[in-house]
Structures are given as C-alpha cells and as structure tokens.
Length: 449
Image (cartoon, rainbow, N blue to C red; front, side, top):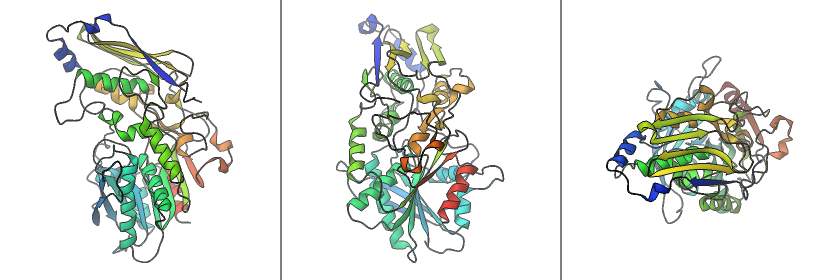
C-alpha cells in the first residue's frame, strides 16, 4: 500500500565542490564512461525473423487533436484463413516504447511459440476466423489521448472495410490497452458507434506501472553528464516522455528532484481526469483482461532494500549504488550516484511500497541499466515488477493513492472488485507482454464465446 500524499523521494547533495571549476578533461572522461542510448527500451527477441507479411497496411491520422496536434500511426491487416477482406476484425494496439512501432516485431512477440506444444496465439486467432489488425503509432511515447485518436481512426477504418456486421474486438498490449480503453470510452462520450463487442487488454497498467525510481534518476544522471548528439534521443527521453509520465505510478522529473512521486507529473493527473470524464471504461463492450502476473499474491524473489548492483569508473571518481525499493518507512536509503566534482547525491524514499518484488508482469529494468553501465548484477535482481497484477486486472482502487496491497490474493476476491467483466492471471510472474499457454488459451476460449 502506498499513499500518494506521503510517498516521496528526497535527494541529498553531498558535494560542496559541485560549484567549483571542473578539472580540464574531466567532463569528457566522465561522458566517455557513461552509457548512451535510450534507457528502458526492450529489444526484440533474437532470431525472431521479419514477421508475417500483412495483407494490407493503413496509414492513419488521429480522429481528434490533442494539445493542438494530430498523432499518426500504421495498421498491419492480417486476414483470417479463407478471408479476402475483413470479416471479423480484432484491432490490437502496440504498447509502451520510444519512437515508432515495429509492427513486424509486434507480430513476432505476440505470435511467438509457447509451451507445451509450440502453439502461436495470432496464428490460432487467424485459424479461428478472426482477422488481426495490429495497430502501431508513429510516436509510442507521446500522450495516450493523442494515440487514442489514432485508435479511433483505426476503428472507423475497420468498420468501413468490414464485410458484414460482425462486431469488433478492440484492445492492446500494455499501454496499448490504455490507448484503446480511452479511445472506446471517448468515442462513447462523443456518441460515436464503435461497434465493438469485446475489449481485451494484455498486461495493461490500468491503474499504473512501475519503473524503479533510482533507475529513473540514473537515466537523468547519464543524460546530463553524457548528453546525446544533436538530433539524437537522450538516455532519459523515454522516462521523460508524456506516455511515461501518464503510465507510471511513481515518476521523477530529473535526477536531483525531491518531492512527491505519485503526483509529480501533472500529465498523469490530467490523463486520469480525462479518463474519468470519458466514463473511466467503455460501457458497451464486454471487458476482458489478462495479466502476466500471478494471482495468488506470490511475488518474485526480489527483496526490498537490497543491493542490486554497483558501478564504478575512473578509479572511483564516477560511480553509482543501486538498491531495490525499500518497504515503506521514512527516509529509506535508495542509492546514489557520483561524478566528482560535478555530481554526488544520495536518494531516500518515504512511504513508497516495495514494488520491485510484487506479483506482476516483469521488466528487466535493473538488468538493462546494469548492462548499459557494464556492471555485474545477480540474476535474481535483473527483473522487477513492471505492471502489478492488481493493476493489470483493474481492481477498484484509486490510481493515485494506491490504497491496495500489492500482494493481494486476487483469487480470494469477488469478480465485482474488478472493473473488468472477466480476467485471467498467469500461473507465475512472466515477462511483460509474453504470450503464455495459460493466457493464450483463456483468450482463445473467451473470444470464441
């Protein structure tokens, strides 16, 4: 359980000489020791191949402006066996990331073979007579409301090209589930007929996601001391993006920020307000969801307040200490970073829950950052919770205050405690977005009803 008003981070500046002149060549030395590239971007699985060639592509522009601008995207249309045109469309949107969607990579991720028989989810959907429309965005990291306009346009296009009157299935992976949730709800608010019978979210952070605060700080630290070349994205570009601010329960705006973490970004509060104004969830479709996290309250073996990794360079002049998120408390040490004499800080959190080991879809957040720095890290610390199970199944609790136990035994709850009509958790805590037999079989069964 976390309390928005009390959950905060405090950064102690520990070098008086930060105001002193930097020795000649030191800034260049530090920059050379720090990693480049955008932090927290997931690589596609090796050897995945080019993906299935779509039967058609749609270039899409948002159905509405957000903050004065139109977003854009692309849909890859895969027709079901025996179909020469759309008959039973399922629109499925891409999730959180930096830059444009890779629709071939999305196909490979969702159609990867899973145990025990090597079945593939998308291929089984096509065989079942469902046309799969994968929806991507020109900027996955932009405002959710903007990309929701692209999703609405995709719904319009599918309706106009569909043969017959079969209702649509609309949903998405991760943040794509939020994009389509908002799109359908906003269409209803505008009294537009989206002709959607089923909404399906896949490990969607309905009430928020988690990236460790200390790792967010490290992204800003690396970017400030080793800035990207002009025109290139910086290390903190994804964590600073509108989508990150809207998705993450806890967020910091720079490496030296002290203050509340659940209300640090006005964009998150604005998005939650817009979602409420649109009806919170679409009212008309049947609402289904799956979670990559376990349901029984069993988390991962990532203890709170433990050393995840340390990094040191330039004979100790540059370095970082990274600990897992402590369990609530006041002024609990989180870690620190240094680049003498330009930067030295220690971070503490108060009343922040131990998200890292909670049940949920995982992300190799600590592992990705440790690898970028060339630091050694034990296997148990590589991955942490990214989308808590309680968020992915949309339990009814305030998405800012998070007055919920992250380790809730969801199996003991009544179905009415979720905003979804039905949901399924994985048998264990699997990687965010991974297709498993438990989740795939449940989806196929429920979409055939």
